[in-house]
Amino acid sequence: MVTPCSATHLGASTADQNLETGDTFQRFRTALERDFTRIHRLDDYARSVGYSACTLSRATMATAGVNGKDFIDRRIVLEAKRMLAHSDHNAAQIAARLGFASGTNFTEYFRARAGLTPIAFRTSLTTTGRSSQPER
Image (tube, rainbow, N blue to C red; front, side, top):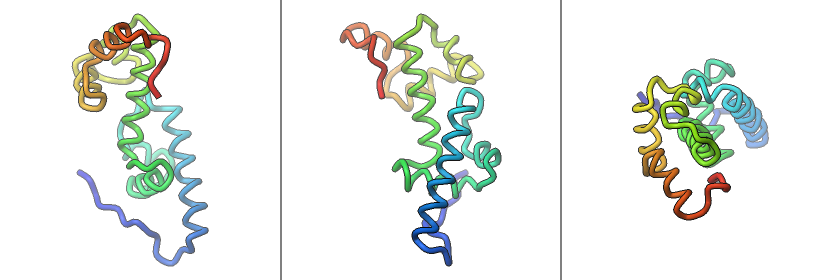
């Protein structure tokens, strides 16, 4: 369930909001880099850094231009693309390394966010000669 998040804090100055937003986002980003292979839910990150999911989403939107869940998804997909481009691991092995319960769950997740299956993504790299360049 998605809860609407207010865009501002009542009573805080813009400078205070910007400072707090930057600190909040940095704490979230640090936790994400540490845990993205195990944790995929925004609520879990919110608990781990001591903020609400709405606060993390606001800070992420202000700093990165996407909501918190999209930021998590982009990090996971980036790592999946790197693994597909630079390893011989199959989808099930990559799924396990990225914390998915099965290769099927990972394939559906990847397809929904990247627009093609992991195998199709890997094939596109080898047919275009870009296998040495991870997507950013």
